[in-house]
Image (cartoon, rainbow, N blue to C red; front, side, top):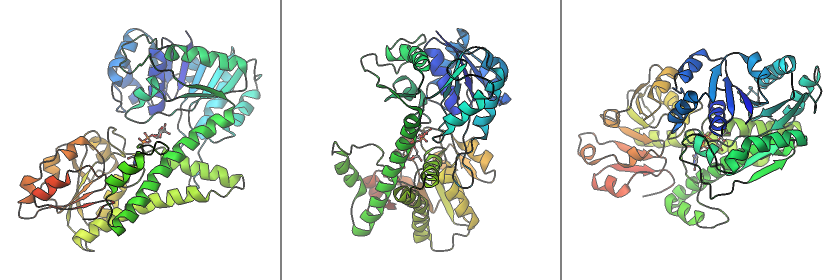
Length: 450
Ligand code: UGA
């Protein structure tokens, strides 16, 4: 079993990776600069919401398989493999900001003593691996003191552990056989289905595809995956827009479309657009990579543009219902996180919608099951609650922004007979239209007419 360090180990990708690798039986040190998160993690509490994470984390702490520290030097010196999971935010021009990755590389250059494999987990532009090798080579010899490997992550927030323990594939990009061998050893327990703690998602009957390639192809595979998902979402949002104009029903269209095995049913839910920390950022980074290499990414420009326009489509629906003045109009937003099943409000389009409505003088209340505190931290004036009935009370317009089951279960009967029945806008197609009709509620489903 290997000694593994995770740099950025209290962040979302780093934590899921560290917990996952420790559950395979490796000894993991998760290093981070965020003291508050480290303190919580030592007590078995995670600041990021991940389904099923805390019970596994506690088992790993009890068995001494994972520890948390802010000491980067010791983490580097004590690891056979170092997984780099620091953030790569976007610069104003869309390019990825690599300052954290470079700072870590400089530290590695000064601290590595024995042969260490540096595994880049963060999604970084093609060419970053060369930069890391250049920094390390200032003092160390590639192939003898270190090797750098690209091992992109495909984790979805909220279901990161499922994606770690039952991945669709593992992609490893390296040119050194020695490094490839260590990575195979690290992932071997996962490939053979043998974990050391109780994990419900292991399916030992299923073979996990394990792909070895060069670092450039590995990195580009990650960008391609996120660009493809973003493209599907913009694609279906555009179909939804056209469907609405000509009188179609988007849920029937999605169903019929997804039955084609060449297309499949996933990632075809229309809505306010793709939010969150990854799809938009990675698509912008990919566009920058293309432009910097004299390639015109016309298609991806269109995917981004459609995503920006989606917010306007939802705004138009609200003003269509209330008139152009939103001053003191009561609007309820259902779903504040960037999607269901997470407490992450970073780059949430619901929050952008809130700001646009607030700036026009509307009186907005928001509901979320997991992200109320986070939303209030970001927007202290937002009135938000986990109690859906309280949020709905008195609302003139209700906008459903994610697919949480609780919204499908709302009992509209009381609201339909209220003096001021709300106008309901469903951007996700989750509501039961016959129940709404029976309650006398007027509604508007994104992508459908009538
Ligand atoms: C995404 C990818 O799905 C992961 O594979 C990848 O590892 C991750 O980015 C990353 O690069 O770190 P994530 O950002 O957690 O994961 O979220 P998704 O579940 O992909 O959803 C992204 C956005 O698309 C959300 O706003 C969601 O509501 C929206 N979406 C998703 C739709 O509008 N329609 C759909 O059919 C699916």
